[in-house]
Image 1 (spheres, rainbow, N blue to C red):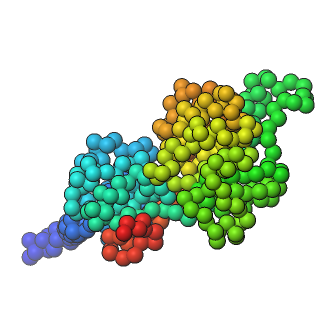
Image 2: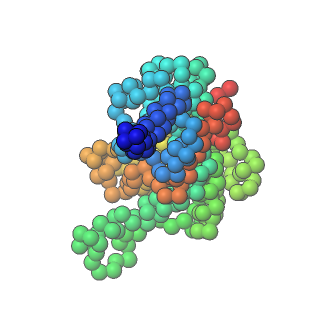
Image 3: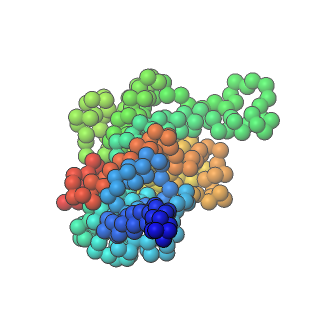
Length: 357
């Protein structure tokens, strides 16, 4: 009887342990059967929350604000079914070969997907999600802010105020260019270009012109923008804003020929991709006063080395690729990328999928 009562006490004591151990083993066994997903960076919380709460994938993450080393990424993608990546990861043949035939979905937390080899993923039947639309407003706002900072020489002015260069009021000192009665040219008239036009119109811009791979008649009528050739875009624009995607056709499209046809008082702004600009040609255009100034949110490479010649120019404002950098926008991007990944893994329609057919 004494043994029986003590045995009951022992069983009651050990029961929670056995329950926890069994549940842990069951969860581990279950996880082995879930699709494996690799997340290549520390991402905004909304996206990570969606992935974890879905309960339908086994998640591993490179938990750092810095990009995952290529050698590490090639190891981590082996056998995965889903990849959640950023612009910094090159999704090419080498990586896809490393992942193997199990990889079904790539979801990039970006609008651009020039870091992904479309030919290679199409060949393998891999689906690709991206995050357009949700960052349109933020990029448009930053483009206008960069335009104003560049044209009104705000960075120069701040430096002068801090360094003691601010003396008596001078009629010609720190004069820049205003938007009133000017012509704004847009290279690549999409959602972001449209949003920029809406924000600039109240400044009194007299004319909007644009160039694209083809005329965008319906959108152009809606915002009263005129289609012109690339040459005319360069010749007529007081402010030339680059909003186009990076493609083989647009790579280096902003070059010596374009700059040589621009007005000497023109302001050049790029918030699209660094590779659409030939930076050496831009540097020469700024040094020789062929154009008045430039504002860049994107460069090649990124980050641009601190000793790069462009940083030495007072008439060049360079930002560290922050066009979409609002808390709300980055969370929306991460959430959309997560939903693209999950629906792709389930074989359903993605909220935003790159058409590969």
